[in-house]
Length: 130
Image (cartoon, rainbow, N blue to C red; front, side, top):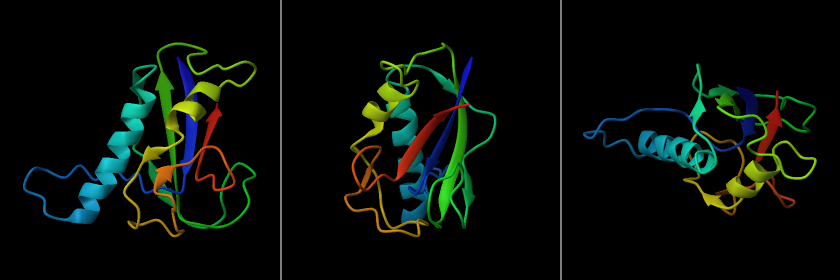
C-alpha cells in the first residue's frame, strides 16, 4: 500500500455529527472531510488509522508560515495510483484542485475562494508521498 500525507489549511476535522445535530460548525467540518475523502476516492479506495490532526503554529514539511492546519496520513491500495509523469501525487493534485469547501470554521486564514486549492498562488493543500 502507498502512503500519503495531506497538509491543509482547510478545516477537515472528522466531527461525525448525527442526523439530529444542529451545530453548523460540526456539519461544515464533516462536509469538508467528506469532500476530501470523495475526491481522493475518485481514483482509489483509501484507508487511515488516525483521523486528521489539527495543529497550530509553523507549517510542517518546509512550508513557510504559521497557521492552524490539519495533517492526515492515508493509504491507498495501489502504488502509483496518483502518478502523473514524474510527480507521484500529480493526479491527486489535479483532482483536489477546485473542490468546494465550507470556509470559516476553525481555520485561521481566509480561504478565498472557498475551495481546496492545490495549484495557483493561493495554495491551501499540499500532498506528499511518504
